[in-house]
Length: 198
Image (cartoon, rainbow, N blue to C red; front, side, top):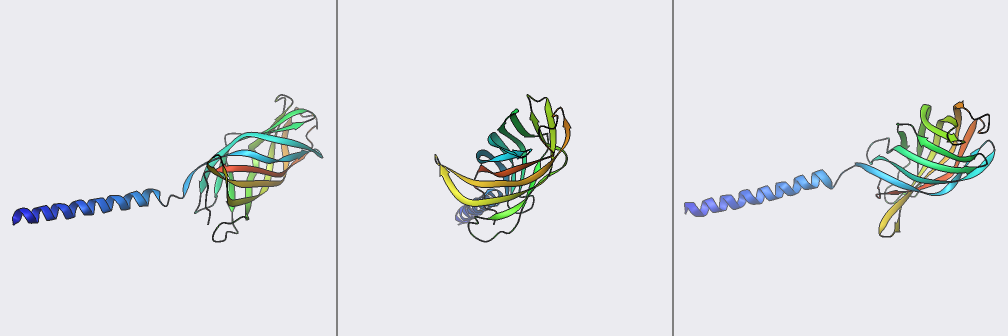
């Protein structure tokens, strides 16, 4: 009789442990709100000194947070644009560009709008003439995030679009070739993994 009670007690203890382990597993992974994100250039161009140039990019990378803002923080970017003065490169100088998203609705949202803060310091840099010309980009850009899944080779991508103008500051060796401002015209990145910001 005592043996049977002991076996029942052990069975109950094991069952409780299994359920607890399952709950711990769920709480630590099923509702994760943060993670890393990477992306590739999809389309768009840039305008410098009144002329528009085609752009490509090698990569962008950062982090995401589905609960708090900034919803995205890009800490690496490398956008290359073809211009009459050679390739113009837009990069980040060991910093992060925070993206604040709002206007969210339930379900799949195709038009989550927000702002990417480039800042007013040395964060975003552009260079040209084989890096002989360098400048910083200051200001904010408009952002649109589209949660629609776009499968490519079994991977679901989502689009983030940057658009708007900024001011060029701290120019060195550019001889006025870049003008005083720049504009990104609907630069679209395909980001992964898929993120639900609702």
